[in-house]
Each structure stands twice: as C-alpha cells, then as structure tokens.
Image 1 (cartoon, rainbow, N blue to C red):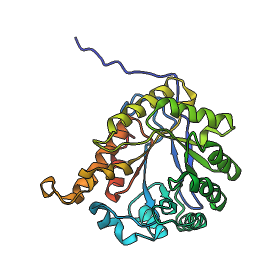
Image 2: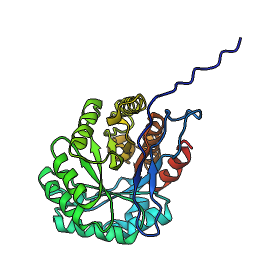
Image 3: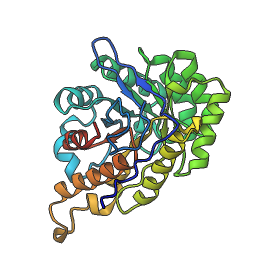
Length: 306
C-alpha cells in the first residue's frame, strides 16, 4: 500500500514587505507565503531575493573577495553599480562600518554623504546598516534617515535603540530591520515594541543574526525555522520576512585563511563557505540573503525556491 506524505497546512501567512526602488529601478517584494520553503503545495508568491553587501572604510579582504571586490575598495558608489549591473544583486546592504572609531573613524556626515552617493549611483533597493558603535549609531541613523533621497531600510533596531531607529524611520518614511541575537523571544519582543510605537508591520524585516558554517549556523537554522513556523501558525509579530546576513561566514578561519595549503584553494573555499551558509538559510525559510561574493549572487538566486 502506498502512503502519501502528509503535507502540513498553516492558518497564517507571512506579511508582504516591499523594499522600495528609485526611479527606473525594480522594487523587491518578499513574504506573502503560507507554507514552509521547498513545499510546492503552498502559496509562494515571491522568490527569496539575494543582495550584496558594500562596506565602507578600510578593510583587509579575504583572498576570495580581494580578487573580485578589491578593485572597487574605497569607492562605494562604483561598487554599488557593479553589484547591480555586473553581478545581478537585487538589493544592496550598505554597511557604514567606516564610521566606527575602530575602523576608519569616518564622521557621521561622511556616512550620510556616502548614502546619498550610493542612492544616486543606482536605483536598486538599499538597506543601510550602522557602524556597530552604539554612541555613533545614535547619531548616524537620524542623519542617514534625513539624508536618504528615497525610502531605505535602516539596520538595525534592537532593544537598546529601537525608539531612536524607529523614530528616524517614521519621520522620513523608511523601513527598519529588527535584530535579535539568535533568540526567538527577543525577536518577537522587538517587533512588539515597534508595533507599540505605531510602526507599520509591512515596513519591518527580521534579522535573527546569522552564524557561519561551523560557527553557529545550526543555531541560526533552528531560529529561522522556528520564527517561520510561528509566523505561519498565526503569531502576527513573527509573520515577517527574514533577512540573513552571510557576512559572518567570512570570519571563519576555514573560509579566509590562505596559510594552510592542505585545505585547498582559499579563494574557492571562501566562496563555498558562504554558499553553504546561504543554502542552509534558504532551506530554513530566509526571504533575503546578503552575500559578499558576486558568484554567490547567481548561485543562491538559482537555488531560491520559486
């Protein structure tokens, strides 16, 4: 006797979120699904989108990235154009890491100027990340919100700064990325706090913190899957599209260390480390992937469920 597999059905649906584009650009729409990934029986109106990160300030790139991104180092606007027109990124994650006092020390107004330059260089949707320094980000996010010439998403809002980030986003019509440290309860709490401020749910993305392959990926996979299951099961505060930033994959020694010849070609190894991390996130339910290697834009886009 042939037994048909049981296909789970869910009462909820993930909220649809649009990342706005500039004039002539294509917005990115994610969410809207009522089923887990890889289940064709469900309704999946939008494929996951793959974008690329642009970092500001000086940085020592791993071999795999230095070969392809190195020529654009120090020129965020030129790199933005290349990411979109040359490598097929559907959105950009502009990290203002150069504004961190320990990583270049660019001023807040320098960061705001870079945002304007990147937005002028490409019409693709943009997420703007802070520098990681709490004091600087407290001044940087309001400046970026005011300087942006079109709607962007600010990354990120968390327990310490959600009022500031959400206030800046509300004042100028931007979206926010809510961040939590691989913890489903905190992920829900941040979205509840944003909702209490009157922030529209359709302008919120969830970033659950992504650990790289061998360095926390299993925890990330579990949390992404649990967030998605909760959202599909009717938890409105977790029924948001999920963004996974793959940058931590490059922090792994196995991904970036070229001093171990027995480990194989470091350039190929680094790209594959990020790729494996991204594939796992897609299987868990991620809607947006931020990668650093151009070849992974194509690879992960092809793997995205359609």
